[in-house]
Structure formats: C-alpha cells, structure tokens
Length: 231
Length: 231
DNA sequence: GATTTTCAGCTTGTATACTAGATAACGGCA
DNA sequence: TGCCGTTATCTAGTATACAAGCTGAAAATC
Image 1 (tube, rainbow over the protein chains, first blue to last red):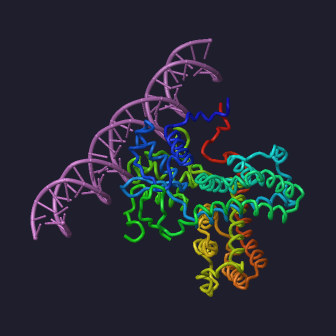
Image 2: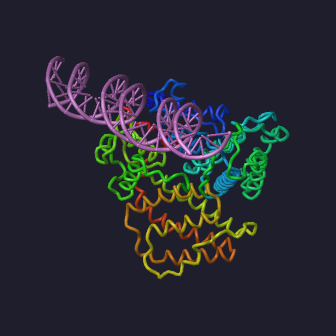
Image 3: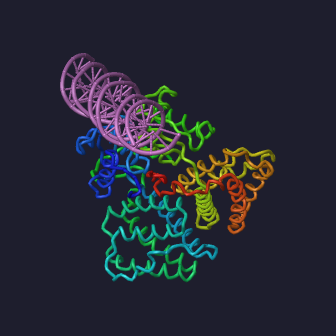
C-alpha cells in the first residue's frame, strides 16, 4: 500500500519547498523583501497556502514578517552562526559519546563502511548527510531532529560563499578518521577529530559573517533596514 | 517602539496561548480530538487565526493534524520522553562546561545568589526557570532556545502526574549545590550533581510513560502519520 | 525652497465561502 | 444476520473578500 501517506503535496507544501529552495539557492538573499501577494502570484497560489508556508519558514528562522510591511529573508548574525556551530558540536559530541559508550546496544552504523569512496571533492549534501547520519546512529530522534535543523541553517551559510576548495578534498578523509576512532571506541580521539573537522567549517563561515557583527546587518542589496535585534 | 512595536496580541496569538494553556492545564489531554471549527467557535475566532495557532503548536510537537479528519493532541511516547531528557542533559551539561571554562568571560550568573530561599516545596515553574537560567547564563542563545522548548515539553509530562512530593523539597538544595560547584569551577562535580538531579525527574516521568511504549508515530518529522491500520 | 499634511497604494490580519476527500452511518441485498 | 455499497456529514485545504494600518510621495501651506 506504499504505507498510505496519500500526501499529494499540498499547495502549502509546494510553496514551502519553492521558497525554501529560493533561499537555499540564493535567489532570495538575507534582507530581500517580498509580499505574500508576490509569492502567490509567482507560484500560482492563493495567499492562504503562501501564508502557511511563510509561517513555517518563520518558525524555522529563515524569514520574518514586518508588521503590515511585508516579509524579508532573515539574516544570520555572526553571533548566531557561532552559537549554532557550538550547539552542533555539542550534539555531535554527545552522539559520539553515545556511540562509544559500552552500554550502547551497538547501534546501526550503516554508512560507516561506505566511506571508501575516491578522494574527490565532497558535496555539501554529502557533508551534511555524514554528520546527520552520525547523530542519527546514536539513536536519539529528538537530538537528530534538532541537529538536522541546525545543519540546514548552517548549510545555508556555507552556500553564501564558495567553499574553501583548498580543504574540501580532506573532508572524506576526516570523516573516515572520525569513524575509525568511533568504531575503535576511542571517544576522546573521535571527539578531537570531530571538533577539529567542524571548526574548519566554522572558521570559514566566520570569515564571511564576521563583518556583520553589529546589529545592522548589511545585506547584499545595500539596503539598510532597522534591525531591531531584541536581545 | 521598544523592540518592535508592541503589537497588541493578534487573534492568532490569543488562540495559540489559549490552546497551549488548555494543553498545559490538561483540559486537552493527549489523544483528544477536535476540529478547527470547534476551537474557533469556542474562542470566538475565525478559522484563519485558529489554523495559524494550530500549525505553531504542531511545529512545537503538541498537536498533529489528521488529513481531513481533525486535529488531536499528540501523545508523547516513553521513547520521546527519554530522548528529550537525554537531550536536555546534554544541553545543560554543555552549559555547565561553558560556565566552568576559564576562557568564559565570567558571564552573568545573576540568579545564583538568590537561592537562599527557605526550603519549601518548589514550584514546577521555579524548577523550570532555574534550569533555563542556568543554560541562559552560558550565553548561547540557540542552545537556550532549544532547551526552553524541551523544558516546556517535559514540563507538560510532569503535569500529567502529581510530582513526587517525597522529593520535591530537595530541589532547591540540589540547585544550590549545583551552583556551588559551578561557582567553584568544579565542572566534574557540577555535572554529576546536575545529572543526578535531572535523573530523578526522569525516573518519575518514566513511571507514567512506560506503558505507552508502542511505537506509533515515531516518524522523524512527525508530520506524516502512517496509519498502522491501513485497512 | 522647506516643512507639514494628506491621501493613495501598498501591506498583513481576519473572516467567510467553496472544494475535495475521509469517515461513519444507514439501507439494501444475499 | 451479516456484509457491502451508497450517501450524508464533517473535515481540512484553498480561494477570495474585507478590514486595519503602515509607507511614502504628492500637494499644499508657510
């Protein structure tokens, strides 16, 4: 029966996916403003599903609504990025801790062996999946859910600048080394390798977000919007 | 002005608060079903703000929508509760780690000294605030946000059964001891005390959730619910 | 020319009408 | 009596209409 789920992609889902992709593909960049009517007209949908999609994105932190003044893509402050990276490290560290714990019932490490791929450039998606799989393997669904959201948020950041090609080639190797330590049950070493691996990405992200440290986030359009960064 | 124009609680906000309180005050219990029309009629609101409120609650995990068959308060499985507790411990542990870290710029530990209160029964809200403040003091807003959501989820659990009065009186003492260790920079001891403190609540929660182990709705996203009885 | 006022055109927030689909009750048939 | 098909009703999903409010530019006044 294909497990039911007769979800024939509602209009709201379609709009959500489209907007999300617009944001991730940088067709909508932080600071861009738009109205519900615009989106509806562009995607041939009425305002109702558009609003639902926008509220979903709002809850996920991607857009914000300006009271009766339209919507805009929410910029990430450098502080937020650092906070997200720290939270991500915390979660992945906890995952490794679980995986290395002897009480753990030897959970499924399915993708661990499939890392013998050639050393070519790694895709952002593969990078994301590795870390998500790592956390998922630890078996805590709530942790996995939160972690996935964070990874998406951070992936968007790295989309805003070309990945540091100089280092990209080493990602698979680092992944493999992390897994090796995990499988060996060497928690300390695994954590060290993991943090080192993540910090590289964080440093790269910092280079591009460090200048919008002040509350008035400068967007690409050069527009100035009063950033009411409520502390 | 002051932080984004105090917009006077939109209808959607009102409905959201009302429904949330209904859930927290157990006027709506897991499994209860209702329709958008019901809520709108009861709260004198049209379906539009009701829907927005329901989608917010859905995203936070409190309710779920059955395709064209109404809404229902989402039950928490024992597995979820355990996962949430584990995630909570992870976050609070990380907070303590930050607070005890020497590189930390001696963050604000504002409420730490106000713990010289008499040893009476602690309220669930005070219990919640202590842990939220602890995480907030660590200075990571994203961590704080996630932690707060988890605390709300878990607080709902403890609302479903009377708190173990036998132990309630010790909470403040335990809090004080945790803070003492944190202030002394004794991370190991602080963590030990913290985990011990939290585990007590977890054990209490387990007694009441252990029987709904059945793995319905273990979907990651929680959006799609595959009907187990598709006949 | 500078400043203030007004107003038209946007925006989101809300209400309501309509549609498609799922559920359950009911009645006919074997 | 038990089963199956039909239908009636209720549901969320969607479209659209209306209301309230913000913005900015044009216009009028000083």
